Image 1 (tube, one colour):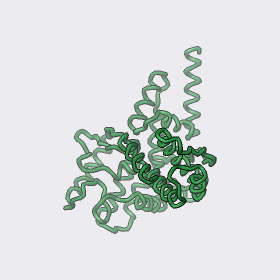
Image 2 (image 1 turned 60 degrees about the vertical axis):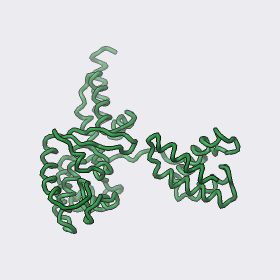
Image 3 (image 1 turned 30 degrees about the horizontal axis):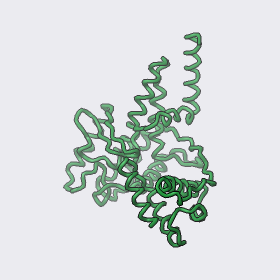
Image 4 (image 1 turned 120 degrees about the vertical axis):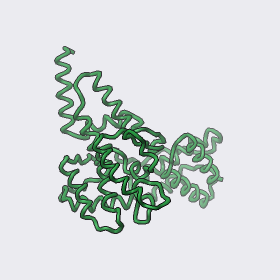
Length: 302
């Protein structure tokens, strides 16, 4: 009974554009656990017991949150379902990003030449992919999901339905267009059925885990932050792009607002608060923006 409720709930939310990869796994596991306990409805005690099996405070919090959302949906139809209060508290502080210097980005792309040639295109694939992410702020998954027909004329990328179910167009800088064109000349010579822009040794989409492992290797080859407790990540290239874009932000009030909206759209943020986060996440940027704001206020006599 509960598994049928879960599938119905997931199907409804997916039609609304939610991907629900992790919630799907959690809720199906909970449904099987609850059924094994003899439950036909969501019970708070069962939900808490199941959530407690999570490996960390964050995991336990997310597990119980997913069940509570399911229970709210089901309780609208049947008040016998109980909505568990989330007694687990996950840390909400996001780790500060690592902001790469232009020289470090050049070192990263250059380090691709030192990768072992497990397959002929490997060095070119990673040099181009890292350069593209750095030049556009794409999410890693967005770069991996790119297909040949997503590279549109006039230097525009079509980013299909991604993290929040949104699609968008991303215009490229001429230097990025040139680098991507050079790569695509080689890529299109491959006689393969897979249409992804960046391919693995098996001529298919590269997995995220493979990219992360290879990036760590490239970072070590480039000698970037070798002593840092939390090593820089490939996702920090997206943070770096956003930070550099905000550093170019003019100081006029109306222009600042337009700049933030444009950047949020370009990055695919569904909430501009995610874009504002880059201000507080980068102390140097926060200091600069604060100084500009104080200057603006003093000039306008506010």
